[in-house]
Image (cartoon, rainbow, N blue to C red):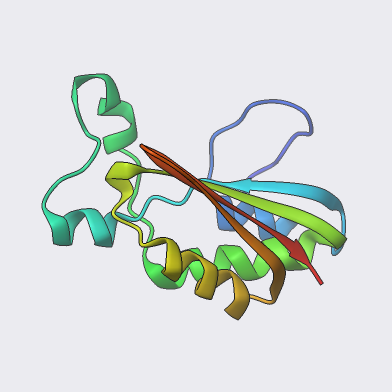
Length: 125
């Protein structure tokens, strides 16, 4: 298991970090899921020359993303906020994000749509 340090940029597995945290310890979580299944299905992505490092990131399956969302819900304090960001290249339908957050137990789900991106914010009940 990884030895996590506080307030220092680190690399590692998101689910490993989340499961190491105590219940209700955070007021805010930002999650940038790598929807590889969607990108592979659409046969495109954001792996241009400036994104080679991002392309090397391991793919996140839908089950892995759901597990991360459940763990984020566990570590957020009541009333805490989750924020997710998506580019136009993510291929992720906005409606699916709202449904996934609701299924993970989040409420007050808001989708903010912009021409080349959208973000989602929700609250832990």
